[in-house]
Image (cartoon, rainbow, N blue to C red; front, side, top):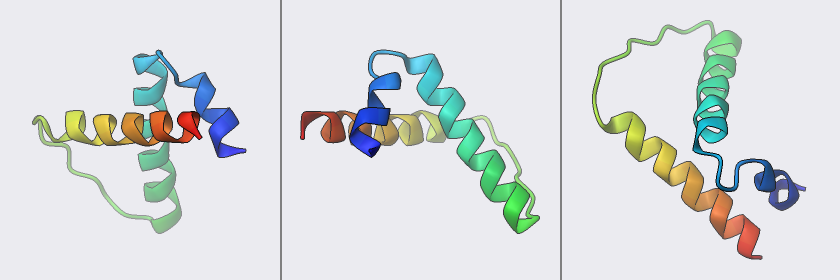
Length: 60
């Protein structure tokens, strides 16, 4: 199921970034926590990791 869903993000970097932001939003909403955003390259690294996972799942 996850592998087939990853096709929606294949080659669509904007969709993957939106998904990442949605996951962050959902985790904050459920925990009632607060997020402090700091401009940095950290978010680029998180997106790359999610993209690597999506690609790895697509290869299986």
